[in-house]
Length: 500
Image (tube, rainbow, N blue to C red; front, top):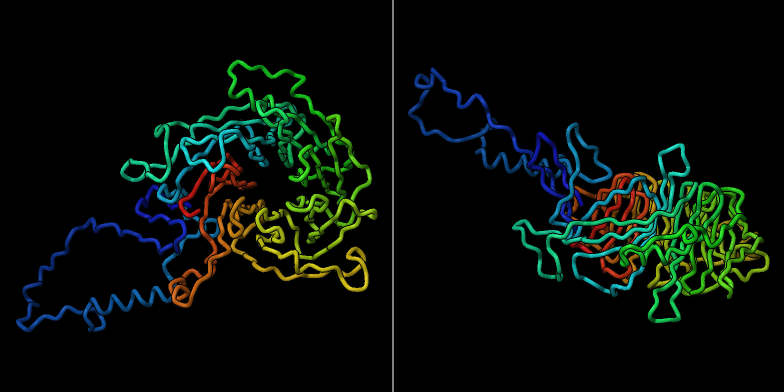
């Protein structure tokens, strides 16, 4: 959540999390001329009783109260909405610290527009500050030299909580170090191409004394998909003096099945050894499986059905053989890898524009969220999706299902959407309007509350929080720090709000 600031105006009020933004108070500048003295005042003085009244003859207080009501009814005071309202010249945005429990921005040498959060051994459901977060990202270097690109394995530490206005930290969370400064450590894996999307997967170790094996799959501009083992890179952060060898930087596998670059990649959560889906701009989807010997085998028979690029792929969180794909053809299709015909089991036309991103709820597995190029994100109940009568879904006309929820709050394309890991009503969304928004689908307004929101009808009641993130691309919930999120764009932002 942010508030407006300007060199000329420093009294603008903050936008509070979970509350309706109030009209901006603008302080008028005092009259530099001082009081005006009328040299003819004595000549016009009357002995009659003087009644304080305005220009229409009514008492000033009564007239001013009515004018204020008229202004409120007309919605004249400008309600500032991040990502929608344009800043005036000289104005900038800055965060309102009273709406965050934690907020840190960390910069990398090159933009990393795709990343993933790595589960660690520090414990689940932790609330101790300063916090530590492990991530992996791929760069998009603004350089003619492709050798400037890399995979960055990172450790964010010293992530302290926000202090209250009186300088004291709130007592709801433990804190080991109140004044810790954030630190970004990283190990780079050379990659002679830019990263379109990167995802991580962890295989539990058979030896309790050893960490899980952490693999990454990187979809690149070069059309190749690279699988790396970043386990030694992660371990090096906690073992000073560790040197990563050139061999450890080499990919375990390079998938060359794709003839065009792609953006869709996902590891199955139900195949511990490693089962990977990748989709490209030609609409082709391939499955790569890790063998018992530790190698990888790609099935060269693609899944085909989309008429345009595959933008997103996700495995079902509950059925090991099922996955869904979203495409720039405006459809979401559901597949079963056991299908001999390699055709989708369900095909639904959910948008007239590109469907960029998708998220399958881990808590309520018949719910799927999607985001499109028009700035609309929606929630779908997969139980309502049925194959067309009289034939298979692949050959029947595409159905247009109705979403159980749909929001067009954002004014630019949706770039990321993700369900909360433990709450099936909370969703995080990022968009090209430089915002990350948090939503609570369980919120409903009664009649009395609806009256109080008359001035902000275009702000849905389900909107909990707006976080400003320049060039926002991806947002992910941390699976072990409840309510914590990491977002990327111009820089990395690690934050936790008071509303979630």
